[in-house]
Image 1 (cartoon, rainbow, N blue to C red):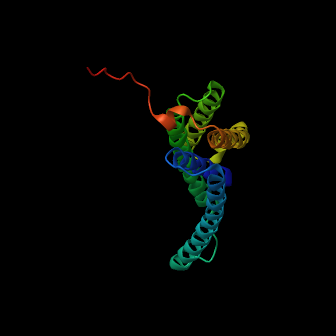
Image 2: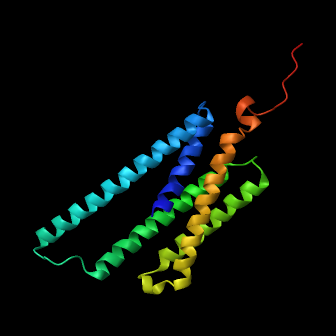
Length: 177
């Protein structure tokens, strides 16, 4: 889950670095601060979920925890939403990296394809039994690869600001007489 959230955060950091004059050490400090906030947000989300679960149990008068089927349904819904957001984020990143080295663009294109496949697999499943075990195992590897590619992109941008970002697009000027 952390890997997925970081996959969303890294493109946002890239966007900030594109539109920012921050030097690389400040970008790195921002990234560390963001990771701290991400961790705090995850903990808060977990506490909110626990509070909601307890309240739901109290309101329903049921002292037993949520049924496994209900938990599975909620988990699958969360997986669908996360993979959808991951796919949208990867699409935005791929569209924005034109002009960077082909090897980096190819990796990001692979990330886009992997996110599309993951979203497609989770979208059609009605339960985790509908997902082959190979999909679940592959999803973990693909999420790790997506995170690695996004971090590689961020490192590249931190160390190699594209010339067009510094001086703007090159276009011929009209001669004035």
